Image 1: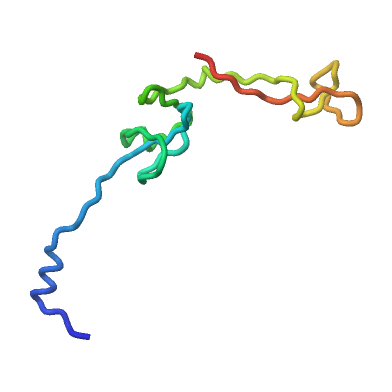
Image 2 (image 1 turned 90 degrees about the vertical axis):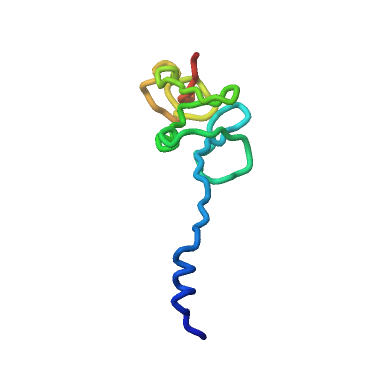
Length: 114
């Protein structure tokens, strides 16, 4: 193995460094719901976002017509609804949890409002 000469050392030290551009993206489904925030070039739908939006990484957003829209937390409404799966309760009183008697199953459903 040969040693490096001083000229070779200084040439390597002063060689320009290749810099890749930095970008921030939000990848989303066809309905506008977010999939992931990334700094990588991935396949799929995305919009360019700023660094603050990237660091927040909020899931309370939608992409509508190529623009990011925040969804206010107050516009998410949770409600207990009868269901085939969920917690089994007495048909006369939802406060009484029971499995071995006639029962109604309840689950939590989340709705968005405009």
